[in-house]
Image (cartoon, rainbow, N blue to C red; front, side, top):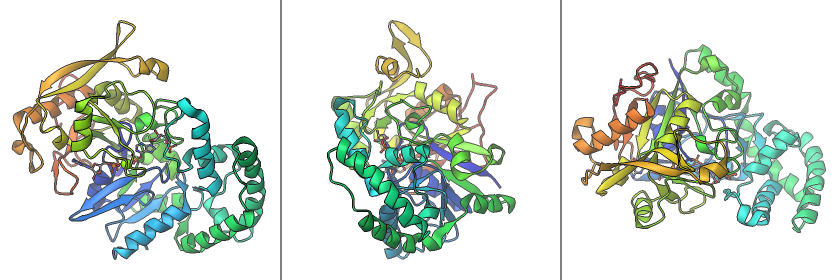
Amino acid sequence: MANVVVIGAQWGDEGKGKVTDLLSRSADVVVRYQGGVNAGHTVVVKDQTFKLHLIPSGILYPDTKCIIGSGTVIDPAVLIEELDQIEALGISTKNLLISETAHVTMPYHRLIDKASEERRGSQKIGTTGRGIGPTYADKSERTGIRVLDLIDPEALPQQLNWTINYKNVILEKLYDLPPLDPAVVIEQYQTYAERLRPHVVDSSLKIYEAIEQKRNILFEGAQGTLLDLDHGTYPYVTSSNPVAGGACIGAGVGPTMIDRVIGVAKAYTTRVGEGPFPTELEGTLGELLCARGAEFGTTTGRRRRCGWFDSVIGRYAVRINGIDCLAITKLDVLDTLEEIKVCLAYEIDGERCEHFPSSSRKFSQCLPIYKTLPGWQQSTSECRSLEDLPTKALDYLKFLAELMAVPIALVSLGASRDQTIIVEDPIHGPKRALLDTNNVPLSS
Ligand code: GDP
Ligand code: IMO
Ligand code: MG
């Protein structure tokens, strides 16, 4: 039995969907603990591609329970669309459970998200426009609508009448937008409630019961460490806590219940939306990574910014999440390169800096200090073991593991399930080599 958190170690889109799907084979329960439909997790099974926004990436296994936890924000329209799509493929969603205390994204959240981004102009965050920030803001402000309110036929009209009248003032006076008709929204959301009601549960209780029964629980992070509200590149972050600690709050489990943390990182770096990105490549190399990695957002279709692997943020992610082992994805994207750079540290105002600076202004001034490694210029997408890899590709992975002082348990070389090298069992295998940081092999 092991309870494992899978998190993104960069700015999201690291391949958490693929890794979660793979690890779900040995999980009894998969839990999403934060974020909403801003997430887009891709799972490729044979010739089918699933793009999941809220439903955990364990849904493709018939006996795995999937839970959308309390710390998430739920857009019912998108969730229902997702349920319909999955069911249309003949996959049952009877094992999907939804937390009664998750917050609900309302039409005014989406409108305010988009309008506030427009108002920010050059200061915009580059959000997904899915109403995530405004939903979490209402949660903190204590004007949010929770799933248990959504499915309560008496509470919903009462709460929404009050809230929509309040939000209409903001829509009209602040953003010059037409007001919403409470009756229309109430009717629409009551229809959603009927569809979702059979799935709604006390999710932290369900998770606790599974833990008591010694089941394997996998907590699937959305977004990534550098998008964390508290620990990321604020204000260019999302409004939740994707870091491993967020799993405890968002799923409602105690820290003592978590056995290990797996960090997912690309063999290079990408970021969508605004905000500093020291190793970003703006020229033809950036274009090449984007083209080879098909780096376009799963949710919004936006082009992802691409750059070299940054071990400063990698080490930061190891520290903030307590990462035990890494899953390195998209190694195949680097296959054609003659040379590959890795950022070792930054230079700020002429001084070497080994640590991620908290200030985004300072971070935007960081100049990467690189080490250049030779490329392998050979296809890796058919490799199925470390022995199959070109020596230079293996050296590259060893170098990353050493820089981050964490073993690599899994290497991904393509979007499909079989395009994977399991170096060591990520769930029961290598743990963080805390004591011997001078000699961290690919696996311990
Ligand atoms: P997530 O949000 O972390 O789940 O990642 P996304 O699904 O948004 O983006 C990752 C993209 O890379 C998806 O299109 C995956 O199918 C794809 N992918 C995952 N692993 C690999 C890999 O090892 N190589 C390649 N070429 N593509 C991959
Ligand atoms: P997955 O789970 C990559 C980014 C947005 C924007 C910032 C804030 O697929 O890795 P938001 O809509 O959350 O208020 O936007 O966060 N962002 C993501 N970037 N992957 C994601 O999810 C993201 N979810 C949000 O682009 O910069
Ligand atoms: Mg994604």
